[in-house]
Each structure stands twice: as structure tokens, then as C-alpha cells.
Length: 273
Image 1 (cartoon, rainbow, N blue to C red):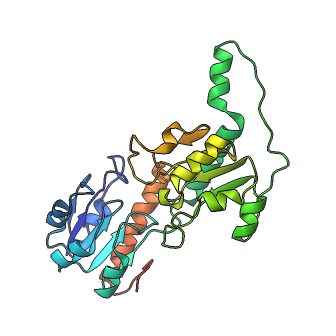
Image 2: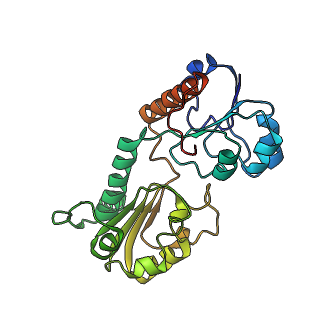
């Protein structure tokens, strides 16, 4: 079978190998594919039966134009770049990669929180500039499970680690922010569209939200007119929390296992059938 990977550079910039995937079929790997060029996406998929993507959209139009597609695999946990309903209607299994980067994303969220609370970069510069300043403590803060209303009303830190669906898009907005404690900290290591960015920027400017640590934004790479670029106390990193080499290796191994399962007549990590 022909296998095409539309954007392999993100997972493997050259420090890992596609050798195990190559054993499963005739493999073509594109480092990057223009995400807004529908015709180029269709051309690159061509007559491939297996399509694998990270951030390159696979639309209904692409599925219509490439009728050989029999399997779509994600190089990610989220799968919002694929037309879920179209794949389901056509009987094309869509498989994702769960849990490959839990540790990495979790530790990055904690790193964002600690930077927000302790301003390590700021204090390093302050010492080099001859200033000696204090920082806050987290001693009395706690973490536990709770329903959404309780989370919004009682949390000092709200961290987003949920998938992007129709009912989670914009879950952080002016109305939900209004329910939060004054001085709340918001972290997002999941998907940018979970947050209405202008609403968060306004809340940061007013002080309702003390700070935000974001590894994702609504449009990536970030656009120059994104209101969060000029918002106070807002740390933005380029969607890298998932990307230590160890996590990427696990991701690639699971992607191979997903394709093997499909070729063997079974499915694993399927999300749409």
C-alpha cells in the first residue's frame, strides 16, 4: 500500500527514523505541506491508501478527490484537522495517538505556572541589573478534580488539557472568565480555539486574569494581530510542550502500530467508527 505522511518534520526533524513505517508500504514523507493549499494537499495524497497527518487538513474535498484513501492516521492526539464526519460517512477509519506526551505536556504546564508565579527570567535579569526582589509562594494552593462550575469559581489556576470539539471551542470566554476568582491564572497546552483570545486579552488588561501561560493559539504560527501578543502577563510558546524526543519517539511507534493493526484487519485508537 502507498503511505503518505503530509507533515513529518514536526515529529521527525532528522533525529529519528521512519524505518519502521517504511516496512509497511511504499512510503512518501513530506516535511511540510501548505495547510491552506487544498490542491497541493490533494496532489500530495494522490492515490495513496494511507494518509498520515499532524496539522495538515484532510477535508471532505480531499477525500472526494482521492478515492483510494482507506485509512487516515493522526500524528497527534487531537484530530480536528480532519473532516471527522466525512471520514465516518465514507467508512474511512481515523486513528489518533493518545497518551504519548502526557508527562511532557504536564511538566511543561508546571513550568509555565512556575515561570508565571516566580518570574525566573525576570528575576535573573533583575540580578544582572543589580536589583534584588521577592516572589510569591504556592504553598497553600491545591489540585483536585471538580465539575466545571466549581473549577471556574474556586480555582487559583485553570489548566486546559481537553480536546477541541464543537462544545469545547471557546470554553474560556468573557462569560466563563466572569465566574472565575479575581487574579486567576490560565494555562493552555491543548488547542488554541478553546479560548476566545480577545476576551482573555481584555481580562489580562483589566487584571481579572492575573496571567496566562499558552503553548497554543488559535492560528499557528501566531499572527501579528493576535491580541494576546500585546496582553500583559501573557507567556506564549510555539506549541512545543509535547515535543521532547522521547515523546516524539513514542508517537511514531504508536503511529506505526496503528497502521499495522489496520493492515492486519483490526483497528486501534480509532475515533470515528
